[in-house]
Length: 184
Ligand code: IMP
Ligand code: MG
Image (cartoon, rainbow, N blue to C red; front, side, top):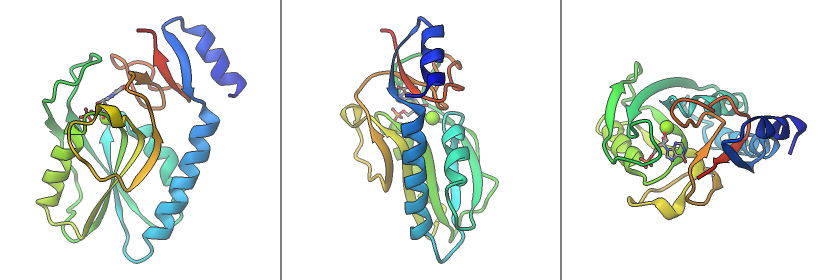
């Protein structure tokens, strides 16, 4: 744990503890970047990120991907600002890229029930990409209601509500460099 993580933790009484220190995140992101770089050597992939939570992860990950690639964004909503998944998924903003015949890599911050990703994969597959893979920084395997194949995974985490590194609670805490657990 770095001094910065500890200082930020002590400054906010609503954060219970640090689950993944920033150093561990950075090390794992670099590993994922190397894996992705060695898998996409033929065509230029497009990294599709889901706003807003995954932007922090994408920004770090793409700088660890050494092969040429493009990025694009989508916005979907499944949470209504609270701590419980509603299971309702809505497209708020679509891609600009035509992904037909492209190698698409979805970059997500966290997979919880899997409802969001299952829905997103369906939509993207209907556009006939050449390939569609999934990369997530965090995986809450115990919360899964849909079966999903994850190609690149940062960390398995317990079924607790986490914040930081892009993840929010009521739009706050996205700026934290670590993954933390909120006080219940
Ligand atoms: P799913 O559809 O249940 O897999 O939920 C996926 C989305 O819910 C993620 O992209 C996050 O935006 C949000 N989410 C799930 N778990 C957490 C959490 O622990 N903290 C913050 N957001 C979460
Ligand atoms: Mg998200």
